[in-house]
Image (cartoon, rainbow, N blue to C red; front, top):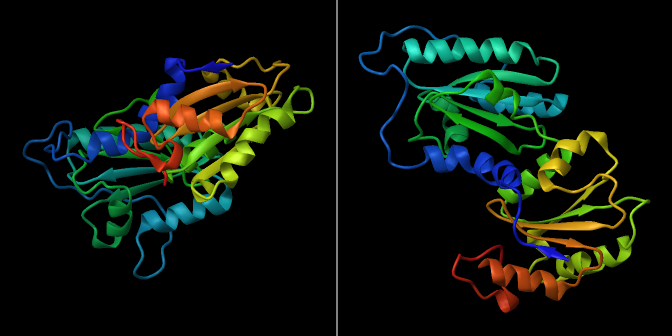
Length: 283
């Protein structure tokens, strides 16, 4: 069975949230910092992160967080004013509550040492201040330009499978989320199409398989977004394409031809690498 209509929560978690920092901040719009006008310069102290000579605090903080298996929340700013200061206070207070799971760093985007990170995330023309949440595997799980709440920041934590899917999608890969365990039926049949597709020379380097055990309590929020019963008796395969669109959900056995057809139907690269009206997926 194939589902082409997905719950809005899933589209949000794998689409809008994933793209917010780029789609919301990468355009040629003028800065919309809250309270901006005639700024009153003040020294905005960075978070305490050691960095080697010639490197920025953001790069050092990201490396350190990944090493510790923690999230990193980056507060990017340009102009110091009352609005920026208020959001910085909220940022500090919120991240202090989850210090066991996340590190935090404050980044001045005008600092030449931070240019590599600013360029990597496409923030040179982004409205400021802006917060990015980066998972231990490097996936961006949340982006909040100009304003945010404590709930926004805390909701940026994602399940391990969500992180894996987001990272691969952000790397421009097609993702097969395989929901199965020893209790589900048709596991081999479900994997057959996935493995055949991933072995195809056209898609080998642009495909990623993510396994999700439906009994894993840590994945309950993701399963809820997917509207998949944790007690499912049959293997389920969710097919996703960049930037974060769920293309199909298949129960039971799969074939490579099914996935190729779903790609073509969705307007991504179909059989032979042909492009649909929505543009091309990974070649």
